[in-house]
Amino acid sequence: MKVTVEDVSPVQKRLQVEIPGEQVAIEFDRATKRIGQHVKIDGFRKGKAPKSLIKRYHGDLIQEEVLESLIRETFPKALEETDLKLITEPRLDKAGELKEGEPFSYSALLDLWPEFELPQYKGVKIERPPIEVTEEEVDEQLQALRRHFGAIESVEEERPVEEGDIVIVDFEGFHEGEPVEGLSEENYYLEVGSGYFNEEFEKKLIGAEKGKEVEIEVSYPEDALNENVAGKTILYKVTVKDIKKRVMPELDDEFAQKFGPQYKTIEDLRNRLRQQIEQDKKEAQERAMRQQLIDKILSEVDFPLPESLVEKKLVQMVDNVISHLNERGMDLESTGMSEERLKEKMREDAERQVKMEIVLDKIAEKEDISVSNEELMDYVKVSPEMRNIDPAQVSSAIAEYVLPKLRAKNTIDFLLKHAEIVDEEVE
Image (cartoon, rainbow, N blue to C red):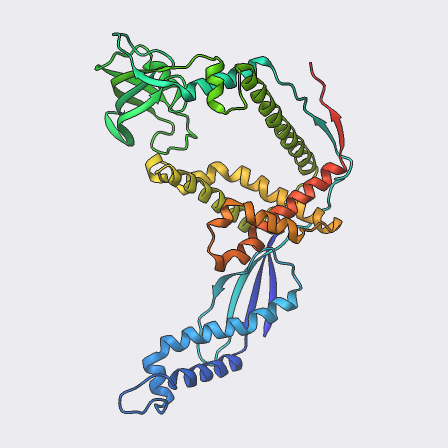
């Protein structure tokens, strides 16, 4: 067996294997005998037909079995000769023509761990963002609660749409006079000014009258996720069928008491909201410091990324988007998005995540950072995604997703512990 390694890129090599004709002949003979024992050819008892007839009637099956057997037998030995550290499973690249008694060659692509020197990762200087809860923030949370518990009623007086209204509309979008796929709805609920639908659309809807059709033009950027509208100016024909408004409760003690017996007055509710905002800001502060730390370390190192890892990360990210859409009764097609366009938009983030994981993995290896059984069990117990996995697949899911995730978290904890943290200056 002849083994050669060809450089494709700094993180990928092509392993080429050539098997001598004698070995190919032996494997053909073995496959013919195995298959001959199990097939029935007219005029012969099972297992007694001559090899020439077995090859004539079952040549494709023999070829398939020989190919699989040759690669299965030779590839591990060829890989051993290279002494390469793989980052993902090898992928069959090319296979030559397989003929009995003649040399056979094939090649496989091998993705390798990138080689790089770790930057200084201990003592990294990061800033701790301040935590301050203002009364304006408490007021915003109270108003959000009012909106949540407010009643929605139709507007009785004859007036046009105003900001903050909830309107029920029928609409259809056109480009150059032709309807655009996926841009038509009936009885669509839209809160004007929320920005959830489209800011430009909602702004131009203000002043529209109930029962009348209005035309609204919206220009979309070239990189819009919806391929049906990207780079186009869409003309929407919109009919306002109803105008509703929120009737919000008074912010008094009675309103506060809706949230439990521990809230006697509106001030009790304000205090609870203040505590929650402070807790949220502490968590945001922690996330910001971790992000700073990762950004600073990654900025000090550069290396080529294995494309297979980037592609795998993109598939995970797209799957997450599809899952979120499915939870809302939607799919990619209904939003005008495609998997390829999503991948294009998400590529930069995927590359950054892959780079971060590789660097953290190398730091964890150098510092001997691991995951305890207790941490693993605690995560599996509370993790919602683990509840949806088939029990037979749990162990592989833990090895592929959970352990790397927890190890990365422990590595960032280690880096934070050894970082130089200073309070951010507040202007």
